[in-house]
Image (cartoon, rainbow, N blue to C red; front, side, top):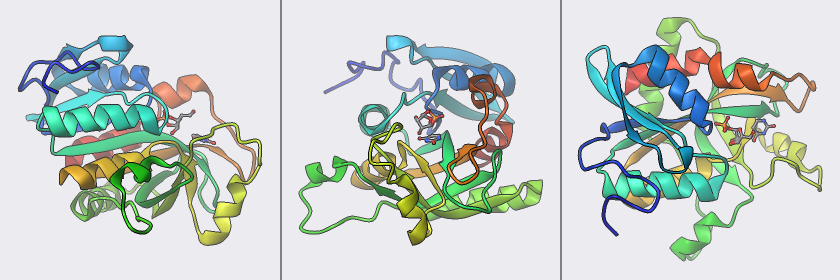
Length: 234
Ligand SMILES: O=P(O)(O)O[C@H]1O[C@H](CO)[C@@H](O)[C@H]1O
Ligand SMILES: O=c1cc[nH]c(=O)[nH]1
């Protein structure tokens, strides 16, 4: 496979070394329009707009992953392996499984459990623990503390299901899992396989503990702390 890929039309060199990756294409557009200077559209295949611009003098890209592990699996694979991207920072939303993690709080995925079978492709003779880049995680925590933003670091669940018939998601909380989202585990596996770096930062958009929720508009535009943290460490 070479570039352009079936899913990304950008030319060689059009992506920065670091790509911020929300699930939502309109969140990517929001970051490009509100935080990047001189942002240039480098991809629009399937409406997954990718932008490259400047943040405080650094070249940074932002492009959505779409929802779920098959989708982020494709985009992160192509960016790491065909576009020479070194760092992907997911800026996502997640549902809290933890009493102390409230709506609008920020959480960092030190690790990501999953109910997906994504790992099977690697044919490992055992189980695999997907983890964040320590370097990106440490930088993110340092920046978050400087900014005075409340946060938690821990283990996430990356689920294949948003609507889960088994109603079993809360069972993960007894193992200390902070929150549920749908991409981090595959992103971490692709980063590991490619010898690259990844970090998932999520803002809590709803709570499975309290039933609190936020609107789609808020998920798209107003979870700006994680955007700023990701841009600072890019
Ligand atoms: O807001 P994003 O980044 O898409 O993340 C979360 O939101 C989607 C589900 O609503 C899933 O992609 C989940 O991981
Ligand atoms: O995957 C997700 C994302 C946000 N909120 C949830 O409950 N699940």
